[in-house]
Amino acid sequence: MATWNSRGLRGSTLEELINYTNEYYKEKGLALVQKIPTPITPIKIDKESSQITLAYFEKDSTVDYIGVCQGVPICFDAKECSKDVFSLQNIHDHQLEFMENFEKQEGIAFLIILFTHRNEFYYMRYSEIKGYVDRVKDGHAKNFRYDELSKDWFIKGKNGAMVHYLECLSRDLLSR
Image (cartoon, rainbow, N blue to C red; front, top):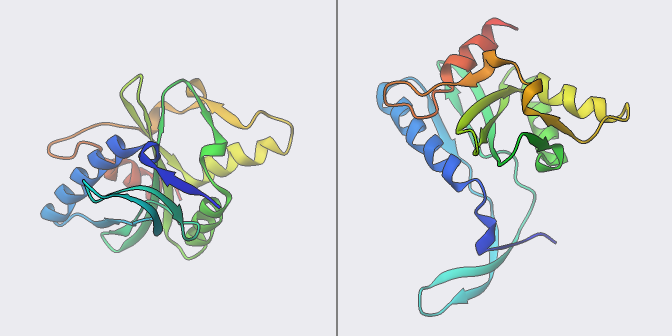
C-alpha cells in the first residue's frame, strides 16, 4: 500500500507554476484545466497544526490535470527532474494506461517535465513517452536523456503564462 508523508510533495513547485498558468488561461478564456486531487486516507494528524503527517493513497490516481482547450480534451501529468536523465519509473503504469485510453477517445495526453537544474520545461507528447517506454522492451535502459529531447518541444514562458504549454499543444494538434 502506498503511503504519503511530508516528503510526498515532490513536484509541488512545478504544479504551483502550472496552477498559475491554468488560472491565467481560464481568465483569458483560452482553456479550462483543473488539478485532480489524489484521494488519501489520513493515518496521523498533528494535533497542534491539524496537518496530515501520514496517510495512504486510497487508489491509483490518473494524471495531475484534466481539462479542455478550445473544445479539445487534454490531460497531463507534471514531473520534475533534477538531472539530465529522467527515469521512466517516475511514470506509473496506471498513468500510461489512462493516457493511452484518453488518446483513444481523441483527447490529447502529455507530460510537462521541469528540469529543475536547468530551469527548463519540456512538453512530452504521449507518442514520445510511448516510444521511450517501448524501447525498454528492446533492452534499453529505463530512462531517457535530456540530449535526446527535441528542442522544438521546450516550453517558453509568455505574458502571464509561466508555463505556456498551449503553443506546444497547438503544434501537437497540427502534427496529428
